[in-house]
Length: 241
Image (cartoon, rainbow, N blue to C red; front, top):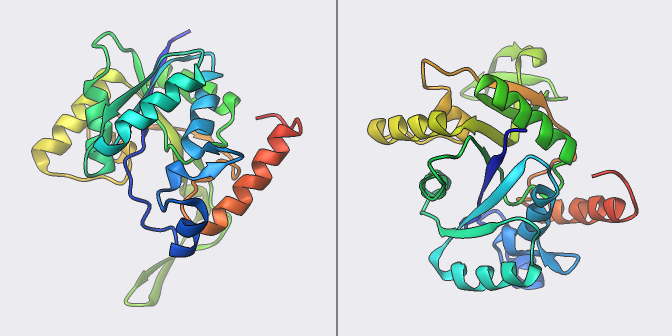
């Protein structure tokens, strides 16, 4: 089995969370909000620690968070190595910093949103296996709503849903391929919305897709926390992760 190093970018400022939510939880930074007594990112780490293909996990954080998160990780005593590195001002910079901290012998790199704690182990293993075979694979779901192309608030076209995918994470790539993608993005001053958008710019790369789940939510808004509590309760009650 090909082993994968997982990068969790967790340096975001949580600008989408409301002031009310921040007052209730003590922070507007969603990755640190408590879910059943533990920060969201800890729940995410637990999933990847349980995945057979995962060798290590690297978290990219703001400098002010490195010490206390490191202490929390030691307290959790995870069964696999979990390391902390200093991130950057953007997600792209954070992932690139974490990438630079990996061993040159790394085979595969998975990047996953720290605030997607409900990724299931089966999907992790599927996307890792496909990336090992093809070089690049992401998780995605087909939208259920009809999607319109618009210009100046006028509909110009209806886009067939079967040709669309809403990208999720993890996104998994061969180590060298992801390095090349970040190098080219840096040279071109290109900023992508995810790692796949960087890899897609390489002529030598083609990104495959593994079917995801609508349970693999990204917690970004106050209402997402209610759904997260429901999902966690279901998992705790014995629903397969």
